[in-house]
Length: 460
Image (cartoon, rainbow, N blue to C red; front, side, top):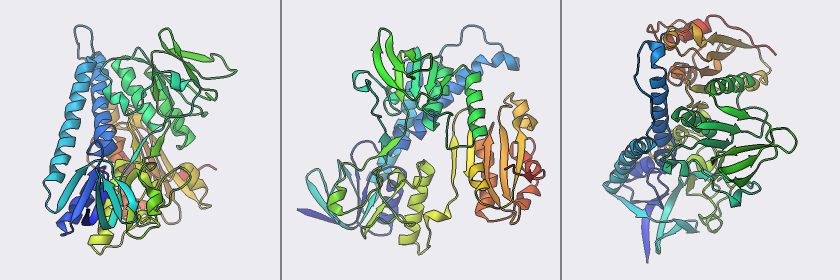
């Protein structure tokens, strides 16, 4: 028997639930399918739990730094990892349960818990039931990549997902991967009290960023005692007496690093291998990501792909924006596309790195005159008052149009302050608008007009 719907949503990450509810509220008979955890990566093993853990790690760091602020704490500062995990689990459970209840109580929306697979371009099977719809939306996300490293099948290892089950303190955590996920876990567990070593195959951390940003981030982490091994081009793993031995080089000493636990943070792969995409005729790229156009339509009429699975963004906010784009086009008669959005994201080490728009490399490739403003966070009153003066603010401006091209804020509250820049970019207003604005004192944002008041040509 076939159950007929107007729309089917597969996956409950950041885009799927909101879209399903919008479709249902529009009077469309809608089905939503989730095979495992409602909320997807963000709610269960991504943003929500990791930022909750980061908050606990920061509390430990601040407690240890109390004397610097004249606050004396008698006795040893101790981190109870079981309680840290319990707090994280409670926050995740609230988010997960709230989302689940919302979906199950929405009229015209039927929730299926099981694995959805295409049987044809307009039919999906789940739990031995066949669903049919003229519109199908894929929000199936991605998972941690497990690289083909020699010896890896013979050792125990962790990923960002399995790290959520850790309720103990690793004595020495070795992290393979020096990008965003790996660095957040590195600082987090160092603050909890672990010895941490980051192993990166490239010649610098977070290689997509400009070199001065990579260097500054590395300096921040090293100051906290995190060990970093770059150019580790000969990586393998083996069991050792105390846990694990990671080979990091075939010729440069030290060639091996001994640790107790191994975390793999080397990227993500899309959850498309078991969707039956071949039966629907949906095209993917060489990495398995679903190919979409600027309105997130696949090559098959009536099928859309949203979120991490389409490789048009790898963040919670880009996934939610995908939902907004699809809903606006289908339900609001409001033409929107992926090309409308400006790249924006943050690395949640402490202090955070906030990035919007172009990098310096990209700006230099424009072939136009580019101006830049630079300011150390030590000039920011809020940073000095908090004794958190690491980092800088840097902004790029097109000299002719006066439009802001991009910015990097590495410093206290940079992830919030950057939105004053981002909003001006979306408004397509010249930088002089924000330069002449009166901001509140004492804040981080109040120095952005000052930053924009001292622009100089970007060095070639």
